[in-house]
Length: 171
Image 1 (spheres, rainbow, N blue to C red):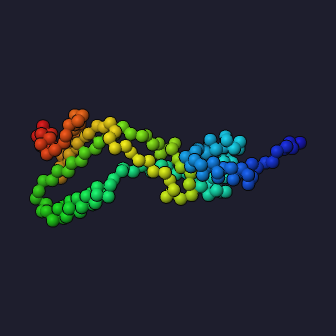
Image 2: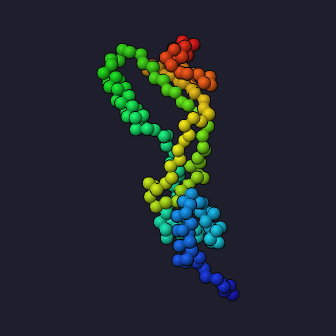
Image 3: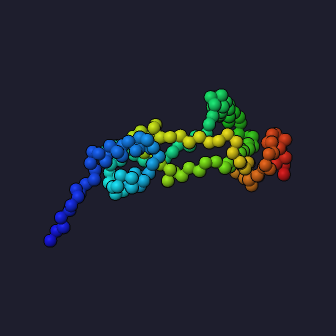
């Protein structure tokens, strides 16, 4: 004998969908699990409401470096100059390619857990980084022949200029 349900099988009513829409509008960073608990529906139902009824997708937060327009223009000009130099130099030169990386202590954003519900990726919140977080400065150098220098860690507060670069390369 079959059980008779006392409540309707589906919780995807217009009222629940409207309440979910309002809650997402107030805080797009709220998780579907939290929404399901607040609306007293299952997680599966909440996923269907978000995807099928509201047409929302879950996106990761965007992380971008804060750059002024002048800094962007300088980067573009330097890249163009570098490409021009590589194209017009003869291959008789031994070239060194170096790069610095500053590892910073900043807000941790988890692309798996920190999600944003939106219809369009342009609506996703952008997380900005702080201007002077605690950091560790590292230099790596590779030659055009494939030789690799072990990474060099600079001292805290050390100002890196051409004299420091030469000292590191000679060492």
